[in-house]
Length: 329
Ligand SMILES: Nc1ncnc2c1ncn2[C@@H]1O[C@H](COP(=O)(O)OP(=O)(O)O)[C@@H](O)[C@H]1O
Ligand code: SF4
Ligand SMILES: [Mg+2]
Image (cartoon, rainbow, N blue to C red; front, side, top):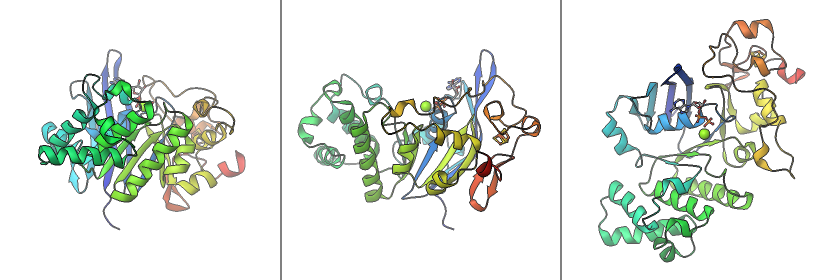
């Protein structure tokens, strides 16, 4: 099989806190191919954003420790110096966030900020950069690129700002884009437009996308494969068809059952699963989902279930009772 664009092996993140060391990401592995969108889904607090920050090299070594292997395009990122790592970020991999306003500088025009990114990641001269800025704004669906380039961030709508962030993210032609809930703050129509835009850019450029979300409808629309995270561990990984047709982990089944009906607000998703994600300060002796799982047995609390194949190697489930969930839940 061809080498994956991004290969993550046994990624673990520890934070030093006043109450001791916590591990919000506990040994997760996944891969992303070019032309592929991998969804990472899970409730708030499951470790999605910390995973993204670890991939991008954004976590401070003073307060955190990142272990495991991250390989992008055959290059081992975990063994690069911080400086070399930062150079790569934004160029070979770029990230977009939920709140574009917090990542845009309010006192610089949109054009100036894209120009900064181009100066950093390309060797284009001033005139070529100007042309490129307008081309990028056009590429992300902005109808009047000239006007947008001279606008201040606060003059743009939320959807426009997210388009600007996408333009900046793709300005260095990254091989991989990490999107951390980029549409969560947008209304449904704008969200759909942004998802279509990302899909179109992926088709044009062949980049791989890691799309982090708590929203299953986004997964259905955009992703080819999905990793379900729970308490910092992968509990299920499969292709998107199987995720909806034959989910095996009780947590995945709960996520699907908690999906809002068509007429309710998507943001209420996941709220209805009883119980909470375990505290980072509680040591886990068995399955992290046991306190919330209708199928929990004594064994579940005593022994941590391993991630194992279910039927095919590409469908992985971390549950002692993966064979039974279809009949019981
Ligand atoms: N810098 C940090 N120091 C200590 N704990 C953190 C830090 N950043 C995040 N966490 C904790 O790690 C857990 C996972 O957070 P996060 O990855 O942001 O979750 P989400 O899946 O909602 O994106 C949460 O319990 C959060 O409080
Ligand atoms: S291992 Fe046990 S507690 Fe955990 S999800 Fe499976 S059945 Fe539920
Ligand atoms: Mg998050």
